[in-house]
Amino acid sequence: MRKREWFTDHLLKAYNEDEPRDDRGRWEGGSGGSELPARTADTMSDAIAISSPSGSMSGRAQAAAQERLRQQLFGREGLKPPEPKQEKESANLRRNAKQLRDLAERGMKPRAYGKKAAEYEARAAELEAQGK
Image (cartoon, rainbow, N blue to C red; front, side, top):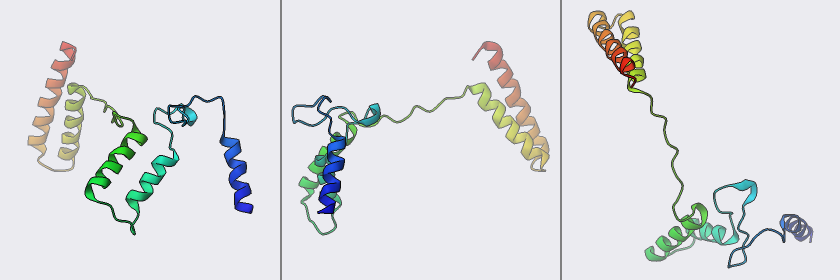
C-alpha cells in the first residue's frame, strides 16, 4: 500500500495538463528544454526487452526494436557529434616546434630536432604573414 501511495504522489506531481501532447497522447516537451525526446514507458519497455538476459528475440525483431528505440530516444536524425575545434596550421606548426625543442633540450637528436623546429617556426611565420 505504501509503494502505491508513493507512486501516485509522484505521478500526480509530474502530471501537467497544460503541456502539449503528440498524436499518441504523450507529452511532447521534455524537462529542461532538451533537444532529445522525453523518455516514455514505450522506450523503457523496448530497452528492457532488448537487454533482458532471460528473453529471446528473433534477429529481425531485435533489429526492429533497436531501431524503434534509437528513433524514440535520439530522434530520426540521431545525435549530432560535437564539432571539434580546428586549430590553425600555424598554431599546429608552433606546437610541434615546441615539442621538438623540448625533445632536443632533453638530449634527443639535438641538432636534427632543433633544425626541424626552426623549419616549422619559419613556416608558421610565413602562414601568419599570409593571414592563414
